[in-house]
Image (cartoon, rainbow, N blue to C red; front, top):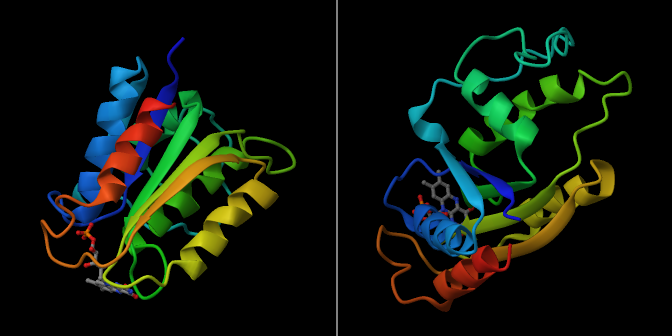
Length: 181
Ligand SMILES: Cc1cc2nc3c(=O)[nH]c(=O)nc-3n(C[C@H](O)[C@H](O)[C@H](O)COP(=O)(O)O)c2cc1C
């Protein structure tokens, strides 16, 4: 049976390199019979976490802030796999993805011990250089502390401008990873 896949695309460029990885991953995953839902975070109204510890009271609308995260929460709740897609920005993930990810805390607040829902996960990244260590470190903590299971990472370096990723083998890797879901 197909899985439910949520893609959080944290690139601000709809036709950029991260989005190209997302498209290929989604193409493979869809061909394999999975249900894929992508959110392009840049075009959504998502505010930073308030750190109020006041969430988790309503499972359908867990955060006190009622912005576009309300569209993501139900999909996140149902998802088997969460794909985190982002360009490398100052050696780490983009603000768009981090802002969204912090807001998932409201879902963990639905549980007494702030336990996060268990997910499988994938990391897709594009960068001009190759310094993925910090983002990779962050991603690995999801496995270590949230109990998520990583299904793979596709890290594509040496791409800066829109279209630079054309013909790169990482697009094939992203497609094959999607296909294997
Ligand atoms: C604000 C900003 C910060 C960046 N920081 C880095 C960086 O630390 N390391 C790097 O290799 N590339 C960095 N880049 C380059 C992007 O990661 C690169 O252009 C990437 O391909 C963009 O992906 P996109 O096409 O999905 O937007 C940065 C670009 C911007 C705009």
